[in-house]
Amino acid sequence: MSSSRSRRPYLIRAIYDWATDNGYTPHLLVAADYEGVVVPREYVQEGRITLNISGMAVQALDLSGDPIWFSARFSGRSFDVQVPSGAVLAVFARENGEGIVFGEVEPPPEGDKPKSDGSGDDDAPKTPPRPSGRPNLRVVK
Image (cartoon, rainbow, N blue to C red):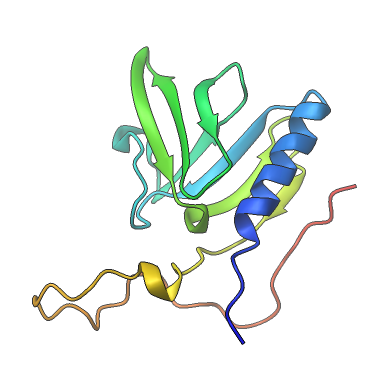
């Protein structure tokens, strides 16, 4: 049996559509230290960054693939942002906080892992260990 694709990109698009259809402002909470994340580092706090992805805040938003791409202005300076869906910790509406909290990063698919560069750091963990217990999901009504 082959492994299935991640649900995360689909859920991100769904909450984005729900938020914009209802006049809310969609935001992403991103683990900024996740491999492949390209964000302005001066706005990262405690390893995380919250990004407004509304049509008024970004240009050329592409939620159709992985990673998520868009251009945004930070303190008047244009910046091309790249966010792998596995780095998204939550997608939510700013006005009421409703959306989905993933709670942890998602490891990249097996085929996407970088090959060894001979440095000997292949055994070093790339993502934080998974917490035990039940996941916490919030139902969007």
